[in-house]
Amino acid sequence: MQSQCHFRPELSIQICGSKPFLGAESVALFKQINAFSSVRKACEKCGISYSKGWSIIHECEETLGYSVVKRCQGGKDGGKSYLTEHGEKIIELYERFLHEMDEVCVQKYNEIFHNGEWLKNAE
Image 1 (cartoon, helix red, strand yellow):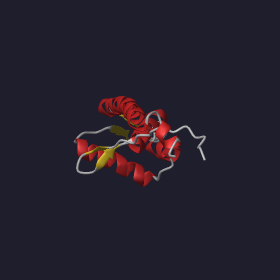
Image 2 (cartoon, one colour):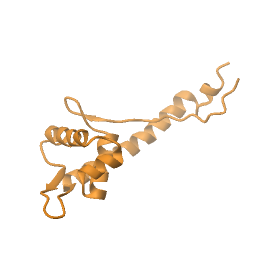
Image 3 (cartoon, rainbow, N blue to C red):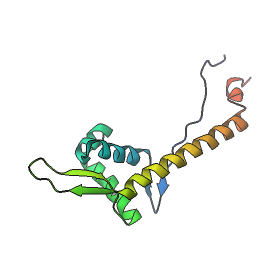
Image 4 (tube, rainbow, N blue to C red):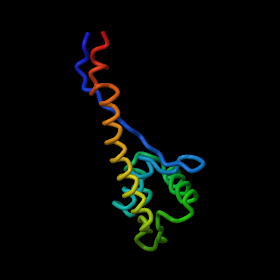
């Protein structure tokens, strides 16, 4: 029986200190913070709890030693949050790194699995 699937590699990368602090989930959260200017709305959009969102932010900032999210206290219209210049740069560098590693991953996959043919023809 031959599979009709098209196989491809999928890479997931986390940047770690003593433990992971930057990955797909944190980058998605940071992007949504910039889009909504709100940690609460960003968490809702990412499908994570508000406390988990803050935990992600604190872990990243504690590991790096600087702020990635700027918080402005609420007033009549509520507070706002946005990425610092360092936070924006982290997203840019992470996405560049991920893109380049995806290219290497596809190249190695094609080399090792013969463009996926070995997976299809296991007879």
